[in-house]
Image (cartoon, rainbow, N blue to C red):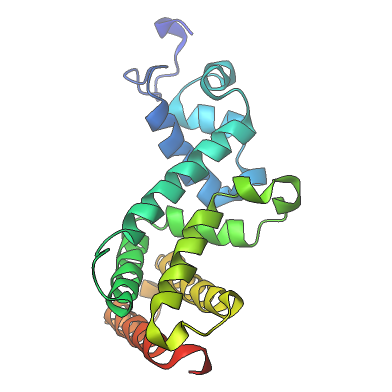
Length: 209
């Protein structure tokens, strides 16, 4: 598009050689609207580009979505790798506290994880291509490393992991609403303490807790 024809409210500094910026904008839109609600036209408009310019980089909406999910997976795996030499119980506590902190700062990633857990498109995607698979497998392995969980089946550990991810994700997503409620001061710290206690109880008592 020639510079003279660019709408006045679209930033002139954005260019077609910044795919990371495209992915960031797509992450926010997919998190807010879901896969079906965020169109290539929406994302292109958010960036001040044409659909053709965006598709030039990614080829299709599916390819862009996969790129977004891959970025989320990479960030989650980096969080999981923290304190890799610590005891399993401490690693679990560190991960979920970090996950909560990151979710409060930028809920897009945790919102996308929840959407993927509830996604009805999984039947069209091979299991080995599901971006959550290695992330969840690592968390399940971390839970099973705790002494109280070593005899527990993976299904029980997965249920515990999904329970915590869901609680944290929904709390982070509710932040635009919760501050409007009376008596909400201190809710974040109260929730942080509850998550810390739940993780400690989970690691210490095993699947029967």
